[in-house]
Length: 53
Image (cartoon, rainbow, N blue to C red):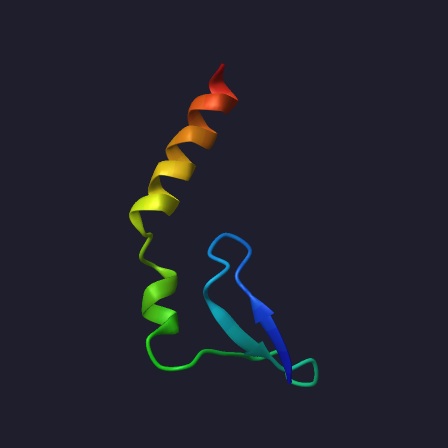
């Protein structure tokens, strides 16, 4: 098992199995993956704003 971190939400860590290609989350991490914190939402808005300039 390899320990990984989500590329957009670095606080979310999960395990990846290179043999079966499975992704395994601990309790609550999968739910948290779908929810953005205020800071993450703000960064996303700024990134979008900067990309249209």
